[in-house]
Length: 132
Image (cartoon, rainbow, N blue to C red):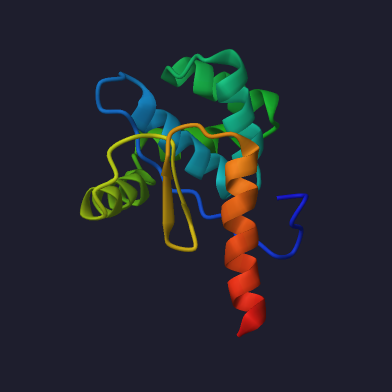
């Protein structure tokens, strides 16, 4: 994103793994943090600590300085579950069943790939746009 600053748009969609106990609540937690301006910070803490149970998520919210009672209320009330469910429905509609899956200007990349592959597709897409 830094390399192509101002030329790319990143859209993240949730696809919680259905066989992992806490993946749905973790996705909801990122959305709850997002409304308080800390989506990526919450994401990064979850990836760093790898604990996704409710108590850990609340601890991360405290660590980030979020409004914890609000965060907890929204998490317990499943306020953001419809967003997560809509993302899952979209993935199924597009026949995406693996994470990570990336779409770059219509080109699908499944799984982890070297950065060079991303650059190749991004450069090709940007060249096409610049020709128009």
